[in-house]
Structures are given as C-alpha cells and as structure tokens.
Length: 237
Ligand SMILES: O=C[C@H](O)[C@H](O)[C@H](O)COP(=O)(O)O
Image 1 (tube, rainbow, N blue to C red):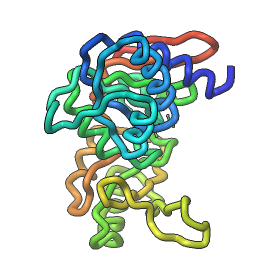
Image 2 (cartoon, helix red, strand yellow):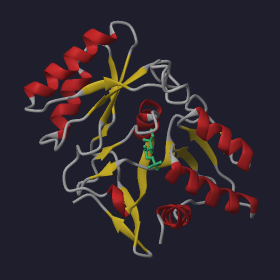
Image 3 (tube, rainbow, N blue to C red):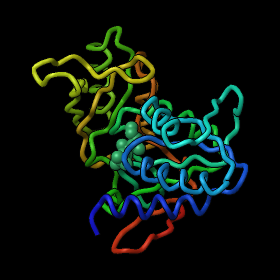
C-alpha cells in the first residue's frame, strides 16, 4: 500500500473516534488533510462537529469541505485534537512542524482534553532527532537567536547544524525566510538522536527569541499508525 493510501486509511480510522457534538482541534499536513476528507464525508451524513484549525491552509480546506470552524476564544477547551507528526517515539513524544504549523498545533493540542496522532508507519522511530527539529523564532535578532540555539544544543551534546527555513514557494534563488501563520521564522536543527528531548525542549524554550519548539512532549494520548494494511493503536508506554 502506498503512503497516500496509508494516510487515507489512518484518516478514516481517526474519524471513527469522533463523536457527534465534539469540538475538535484540526491539524495540519498531508495526514491531517486525509483525516479532514474522511471527516467531511461523515459531516455530509449528518455528523455535527466544529473545529479549531491549526493553520490557514487547514482553515481553507475545511471551508472547501464544509467542516464548521470555531476558535479558541469561543471554545477554549477542545474535546479532541487530531494531527499528524514528523516523528513519533515509543512514549508518543513527537517532532512536529515539518509544515511550519507547530506553534498553533501546540496551542491547540494543549487546549484539547486528548491529542490523537495519526501517521503512517514511516513516522515511528526509537529515538527522536533524525527529522530536523523545527524551532519557531521571532525575526528580530534572528542571527543571535540562532547562535543561542546552537549553544543550547551543544550544551546537550548535540550539533545543531541550524538554518533558517527558506520560503520554497518563492523562486529557489530567493532565500527569503518562510513566514509562519504567526509572522515568525523557523530554524531547522539537524541534530541526530536527541538523548533527553524533554530537557532540550525546555532549554530551547528558555532562549529569548524562541517562540516554540517542534518537540511535543507527553502531549499525545494515543497514536493511530497505518502500516501493512492495518491500523495499530499505540498508547504511551
Ligand atoms: O507543521 C506541520 C505539522 O506538524 C504536520 O503535522 C507534520 O509535518 C506531518 O505532516 P505530514 O502528515 O504531511 O507528514
């Protein structure tokens, strides 16, 4: 089964956990979009839900699919957040932010009673860090913030190989930074295996200029992972 088919399968499996009347957190990325397509089918059949989108891209897709939107002002507590991930470790700690939506994703996941992660099997890892860790920063003083991020990583025995994510939607020759929905930039850190992800997350969030990291520590309550034609349910160890 190809990766897109696995994403559709796990999207359908996630919809089975959505109950009528729920207020949802709606993730970003190709797996979250597969879920939204499956959700819209149930909405057409009469399911009533509303959701807080974690990005402008997700909000636009929901409008197209007829999924009702709300926000955290009207609904500060969500029943369930459903989102993809770039890496998932056995404790369900995650790296997220490959699509640049990590800040809103983390706010929405924190506002939810439960976070359900959905992925294909390629996202399961024994240790986080092969995927470059996204860190969202304020543009002011970016070079100094990037330097401080490298120092923090070094103090955790890691080489950050940090770079500001370019906006690849513009021409390749144009190295303008990607601007997130929150008006920030993203630093990608090619770390390799992260020994203590919780400690690194907390240290990075202590750097002035860092808004958030893509490390989601102990936030997910369950993962649905599609592989070999079956969907595995994983709970934190
Ligand atoms: O910023 C993007 C999000 O964290 C995505 O959920 C993550 O990158 C996974 O995306 P995909 O499902 O496309 O692999």
